[in-house]
Every structure is written in structure tokens, then in C-alpha cells.
Image 1 (cartoon, one colour):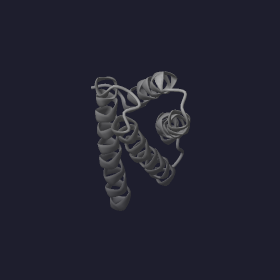
Image 2 (image 1 turned 90 degrees about the horizontal axis):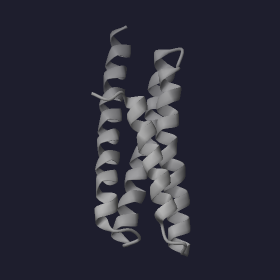
Image 3 (image 1 turned 90 degrees about the vertical axis):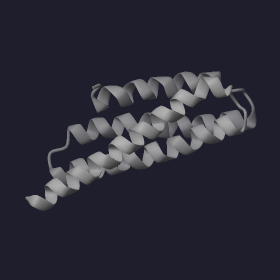
Length: 118
């Protein structure tokens, strides 16, 4: 299984490539900025979580990554449904955003349960 930090890094690269392919319209520019910010933030916050010095800080950073993943999932669906890119181009990325979101949610629950036992 691929490590979460590597997976979110690759996800960010895919987001960057998607944004480069968006049309140069008002919607393409606005949606592009939004998804670029949130999509690259997921991995950055996972990296920060892995470097955390406390369990509390770890959970906090994972929560931020989770929120950014949720936002990214939203923007990707909006880009698809607005017809800004072909469905075939974006569907796998939407699925990856969903999977990362679910992994982060599970990791947060596990971290909180672990913290409660200590």
C-alpha cells in the first residue's frame, strides 16, 4: 500500500496538471485557483502531521488535511459538472480525492481513539 504522504504528493501533482488544462475563462480561472490551493494543501498538511511533535498536533494537522480534501472533492465535482474538462479526464481524480478523504477521516478517528487510551 502506498504511503499517505506519497499519495497526497502525487495527488497534488495531478491537481496542478488539471489546473493547467482548465479553460482560460472566468470560471476556469476561479475554480482553478480554488482547487489548486485546496488540492495542494492536503499533502502539505499531511507532511506537517507526520512531523508533529505531539499526538494532539498530529490530529490537528490531519483534521486540516481532511477539510482541504473535502473542499478539493467539492471543487473537482463542480469542475466536472460545469463541463470545464471532459469527464474522462477528471473522474479518476475525483475518486482519488474521495479515497484520500476517507483515509484521512479514518486516520483521525484512530488517532483520537489512541489519544483517549493514553
